[in-house]
Image 1 (cartoon, rainbow, N blue to C red):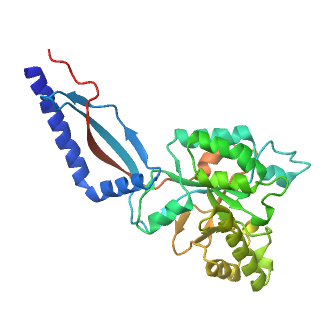
Image 2 (cartoon, helix red, strand yellow):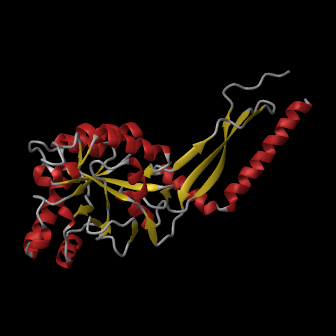
Image 3 (spheres, rainbow, N blue to C red):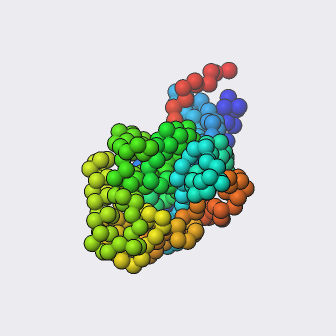
Length: 323
């Protein structure tokens, strides 16, 4: 009897401690719960049941879960936006230097995804970033965005399965005029990726150099691509990538007028972003032949995050036997 009473006392102490941890910053805990309900990939550490207590017929198990999040409210975030093109066997650097530069081998890509997973990074897409800046839900600890340009066939056949195996999301910048063309993704493949949680975003109709075009032509490229992709996936397409990273003030204005929410460039490699510069967010190039240490260094420092603790009480499936 004293043994059971002692365990009840321990459980009560743990519950009080857990309650204190949650109440210490209840707004953060509530934010974490909202994020989970919305499907946010919050970093979670779930323990085994910490204690099973028999108290009359009301047997319970007590669980402590800890959620690692970037709290809401930061006007500027540190978020690496990685840029990929081909995931394939790189061509000869002598015969095709540009193709080599744009190609990451399958082995290297898998190693990079393994490294991100092992070091606690949590891929998000721009819908999650938008929600963060709008105060809707926090970001997970060590957030990162992975983007894939142009919509090559290996996005679907190679990158997509590896991302799924790691439980990762990503952003696919699709050139709408290339869909269903040889060497590019098909209509059905875009839909499948969209349904699986890959964000579909715009990369113009023809991959044109927008910085060298008249305003009317720029408007046509960015607006038609948005409309075509929205018809394909059946929902809004809000994010854009400048082909070859080229843009000017006229280009930015056309993208804004078309109804996009963000745009990315390779004009600068930056991991710091705010709402104010959301039409010129920089990306980090991931190129062929890059070593894993070089890849890791490019990510830069992570944002500070906090750990939210929560205690849950559930019925005990296997109640303790008396004696």
